[in-house]
Image (tube, rainbow, N blue to C red):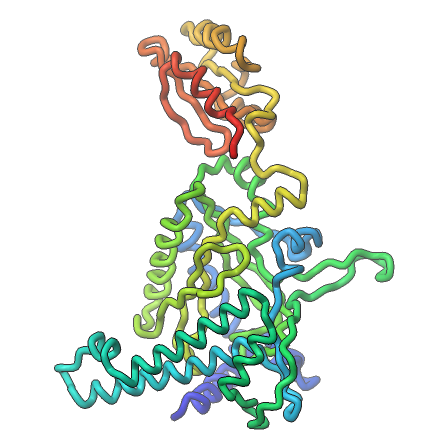
Length: 459
């Protein structure tokens, strides 16, 4: 059975046994929109819960949220979706069919990849147990020729997409003599960009209301709530925020059953780390996520990594975990190192800092005796006396230490100094950082310089 027939059998089975139905089927359906039947909804729920347990329940430093689908429209301007969330489209004049230009080229490269696989399989049968695949793919002339062709095409395609050079993408399609799968002709239109977000109106009168968007991803709900979660959950970096929920993309070229739909469900986790460590964590989550997929019991050869050559506007590294579907290897999960693009962009567009600058905080340090006895308040007052000539200081002794920390966080105090019984013995105190919530033990004599370092202007 060839791949196309196998795929048709799967889609027929999904409908016959109550997994997936075409949406609004009694009205002839709606393109690229599907309903999950009685078995499909249970399967989807189990996948979602299995993911949630592995991602949130099993990690103490990852929490979940459920952000609204509707978000302020500036969210999508800040995130880059208004300007950069586009697909390059091309039409065939004879068939009147529309295609993603980059997908046409990628499918062409996939066919070359299939030729390499066929060469490998022929050699495997010829040499049997003596076959060395690694040596074969690095020395066989036909394989090397195919690989060089893929590399050349890839360089031209992703280079043109990086520059948004639509003419170069069309020229590549013409040079490769790619034909329309329906008409078999090369009568192509120019390539043009199409934004994938669904726009709608909010308000009782459409003419006077603002344009808003159905979210194309769930990640931005995480980013705009970063500070809320960090403060209320007292999260220490590194930590993660997870979310599942509906997303919407106006896919003009929807295809391959439920693989590419206009309304779908995402499961996303954004992990926040210290600048400079993001690529280490990228490698960590790359392997961690593959291990999760392998835990489902499907053969390892069904999965592979596909590193991105063309990076999204927010990323400095990206890879996809691809699965061998009946229609070939396609993206199953994306793992991106997004740098600080999203938090910085939302801070810029909202006018609200997602971290409070220490140099602007009303009080620079709070000194807190752990309890109101045993000479601790007196020691705390001594420390304040030694610091108040240089810094605005605050003394607090009411309520638990946790409540006092939260009050200081609320007004932006960058450092809290806790005086405890050990302070009376070794003259050291615990210093808590507002942004990371990390606590370190330091000698009292080092406090002054430590605070000065915190207040230095950041480049």
